[in-house]
Image (cartoon, rainbow, N blue to C red; front, side, top):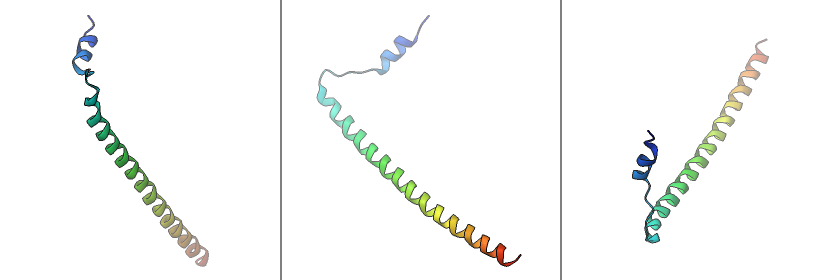
Amino acid sequence: MLIAPQVFGLFLYFPEDKSEYIPAAFSFLIFMMLAVLVFRLIIKASKKELEKAKEVEEKMRKYNEENK
């Protein structure tokens, strides 16, 4: 009682006319470029936060050394 082949057959569509792939390729490229852009922005923000954390840590270390 395997239903999987019938179910997957409903979702698979391979067009005879290959020009139907062009809009899908464009949308894929747009989303891929956006994903890379967002990923780079996250890395950039992460580096800024790391620098801020290092500065705060250094200030805390100096404060602790002065108050010993």
